[in-house]
Image (cartoon, one colour):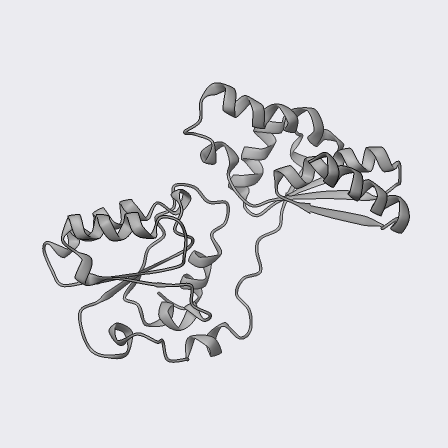
Amino acid sequence: SQMAVLALARYLRRERPVALLAAKDRAIRTAIVARGLARVPVHLAGRLGTNLSAALAGRGRLGRWLRYAPMRALYHRVDRVVAVSEGVAEDTRRIAGLAPGRVCVVRNPVVSPDLAEQARAEPDHPWLREPGPPVILGAGRLTRQKDFPTLLRAFARLRAGRPARLVILGDGGQRGALEAQAAELGVADDLALPGHVANPYAWMARASLFVLSSAWEGSPNVLTEAVALGT
C-alpha cells in the first residue's frame, strides 16, 4: 500500500541500512518503490517462495496480467532475486524477463539439528501411540493451495479396499468443508483433524506415509522434513 511505501522510504532514509531483504512479491514491489523514493544506496534482495504461474493458473488472462506486469516493470531494479527452488527460479525468470544471473537459488534450511530430538516425543493421539491400521499424514493450512479435498477422495478409494486412517495437521477455513466431505465419502470415522500442533515431527516419524497434495508449492518444507525423518 501507499502508506507502507512511504513508511519504508522514511526508514531507509533515517537508518540507511546496507541491505534490505523483501519476502514475497508485494513486499518486493513495495521495497523497490520505497528505495527509489528514499534515494539511498541500499542493496535490495527479493525472496520468492512459490511458483507464481501455478498459483495463478485458475485466474483469467486479466488477473494474471495484473500480477505479471508489475514484475516485468519493476524486478529489473532488484539487485538479486532469491528463489527457494530451481522451479521457482525458472518461473520467476520467465515471468519477469530476467537474465539467469539475476536469480539465484537458496534452499530453505529446514532440517535443523533438533529435528530428530523433537521426533522422539510422544504424539498426542492414540492412532499413533497404539497398534492399529496404518496412518497416512498430511500437514498444512486448510486452504485451496494444499488441496486436501483431493487427498480425501484418494483416501476414500484406498479405505474402500483396506483399513487405514488419515490425519491432517493444520487449521484454516476449509475445516468445515473437509469434515462434510469426509462424511459424504463415508470416511469420517477414519479422519482426524487435530488442528495446529506444536511438534508435528513426532507425528511424522510415526506415520506410515506422508502425503503432500498441494496444487502448487515452491519448496515444501513439510515434505523435506518428512523425508529427513524417513517417512
